[in-house]
Picture 1 (cartoon, rainbow, N blue to C red):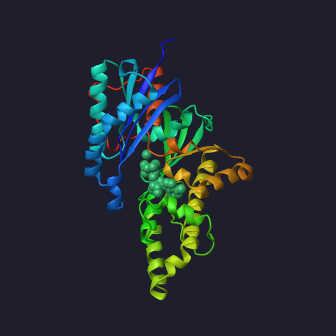
Picture 2: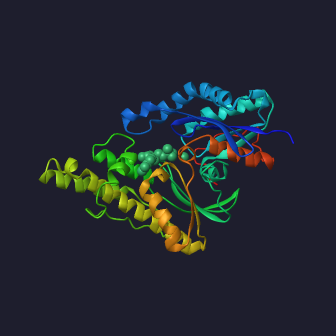
Length: 338
Ligand code: KG4
Ligand code: ZN
C-alpha cells in the first residue's frame, strides 16, 4: 500500500497552524500563536487575518520540514472551511486550494468543530480513542457545545451556549479581576489553592443541555464592585478564594449539563476537547465521574485540545480513506454547520 501523507491547515481564529499526519500518527504539529491580540484583551479579526497571511507560508514549510517530507510526497491537503472568522478562514482556504491545485492532489474541507472531536482518534501516547456512540463536549474560548457522536461523520449538536463561550467566561472574569489575557489558566492556578465555597456565584438557567455565561460575568462584575467599595484591596486579599469559587461554579455547571446529556441519551462515554479541557477542575470532576457514575472519560493531549492543525489532518486522513473530497469551487463558511 502506498504511504499516505496528509497536510492539515488551520486558520479559523487567531492561530495559524499546519500539521502532517501519516497513518494516524502526527509527524509534525506547528502552531504560530498571534501575540498581537494580547494588548486588546481579545482577538481582533482584521489583525488576525493579516497575521495569517504573514504566517501561513513559513508555518507550512516548518510542518513539512519537521515531518521530514517533501511537498511532492503529499497525498492530499485538508483545511478548515469553517466555522470561524471569515477573514481568517479565507487565508487558509485560498492557500490550500492553490497548493492542492499546484500539486495536483485532492483537496479536503474540514469542519473545525468536528475536528475538535475527531482529534481523539489521533494515535498518540496517553490518548485513548472513544468508542461509538459517545458524547463530546467541546469547551474553549470560541465554543461550548455537547455533541452526540454516532460515527466519524455522523454527529448531532444536542446542546450549546446561547451567548458567551465558557473560555470567555473565564477570560472576562479574569479581566474584571485585573488579570492579563487570556486569564483562564491564571484563574485555574489561583483556584488550586483557594476555597471553592468562599463565595457563591449563580448558575444561569437555560435549556437542559444548553449553556449561558454572560450573566455569570455580570454577577462577577457586580460582586467585585460591591466588595471593592467596602475594601479597596479586596481582590488582592481574596484572589485565590474568588478564583476557586468561580471555577467551582463553572465546572459544576459544565458537569450538570453533561449529566443531563448522559441522562437524555443513555450514553456514558464522554470525550472533551478545546482549550478549557486543560482546566484542573474539570479534569478532576471527570475522573471522579468515572467511579461515581460509571462514565468512561477521554481528554486529549493538550496540544490536540487547543486550536491546532493535527486535528484537521486526522479528519483529512479519515475523509481521504473514504474518498470524501471538496469540490473545486469550495468556499470558506463562517457559520458552517455539521
Ligand atoms: O482552544 P483554545 O486554545 O482557543 C479557542 O478559543 O478556540 O482555548 C482558549 C481558551 C481561553 O479562553 C483560555 O482562557 C482557556 O481556553 N483556558 C483555560 C485553561 N487553559 C486555557 N481556562 C481555564 N482553565 C485553564 N487551565
Ligand atoms: Zn477551536
